[in-house]
Length: 228
Image (cartoon, rainbow, N blue to C red; front, side):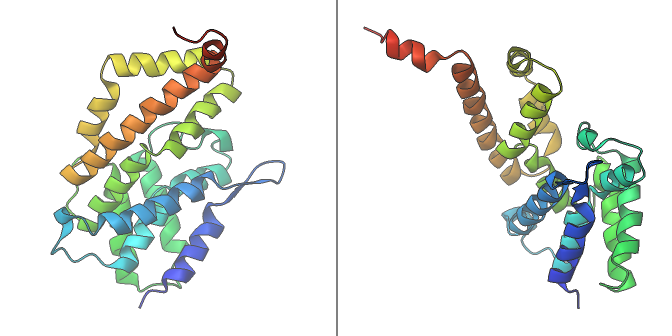
């Protein structure tokens, strides 16, 4: 029997990272916890009805799927601000699986951990056969369409030197050339999660439009010069 609460607490301890000045950063943990919550819900979608998905394996894969970033940060290989700056690589998945096997060796049976490790390793593959890995992959991709993720990326760009205009221009160009629509088609395997992503994309569009309006003080301008 897998102790889900104990695994979650251990994952939180492993994924809340410290900056050089000693302050903590919860971004990686927040992402992992959202992916786990989403994965639990996705497991109940029609596409997974009748499939045997072990909740113990699901929580392990979901919470540790991106732990490779933590491993690289702890080793000094990457700066904390570079976490999730690019797509998680197959090498990082392997680091995550190895790290998980060590950290959870006292929390679950070896066969459970080995299966979970294999699921983590294949998450960057195009073809995934394990239902547990399929669910976490969908949840991970869906988190890219979470407005929290969008806000984090937008403000990270701004505080690292890009202008607000440049950030908005990038979005406009991506939309113009169908980047986000293509990303949805390429990322999701199932109709249900694809529909959810499309719905979230509309929220993205609304967010950027509000950002554009506030950046240009359009609401103030309209108040001073209301349309006839």
